[in-house]
Image (cartoon, rainbow, N blue to C red; front, side):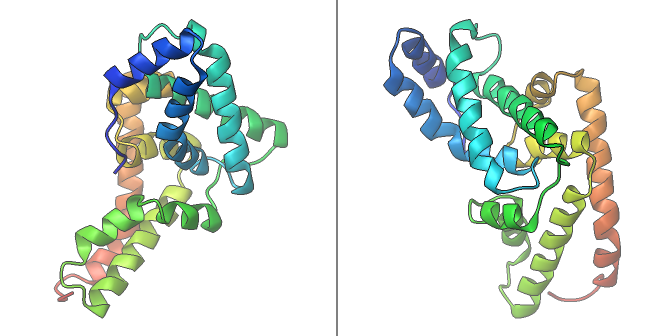
Length: 206
């Protein structure tokens, strides 16, 4: 799960940035760079674009920060910029919003949902348990990859980044009821993909 954030410390850093403290913005970049790259990595097919889009996101955020009024958490505001920047880049390049194996492999090292699924399912650490957990993790990743853009973004922000429904509604610029619907539909689609695998293993000892 994503590391906890500290809105109070973010607000202090934002105030310092507004006063011309470039070092304070560098601290915000260090704090959120991996999370922003992970979010973008859920949206773009070309893993080589992730860092470029993340860099553009922070450039845009730096330029816009004088207008940031603190009506939402800083990282929610930053995520919205990242999503919009990624969409613009993909629109310019006419690329689909999909995740590739190479993008997933890079995120697995950062402790994304794959490692969490494995940790939850491998109490015995037996070869069969490890194999089963990897198969399920791969199925989860594949199911997320096949979701439509809006469902994939909603489930990623909720389950991977740990945002609240209110924060996701802010990032995605839609009503909270729409967020709940998208997350429900995404979970249903993932469960549907996993159901045959789990039914096949029903009654087996891992």
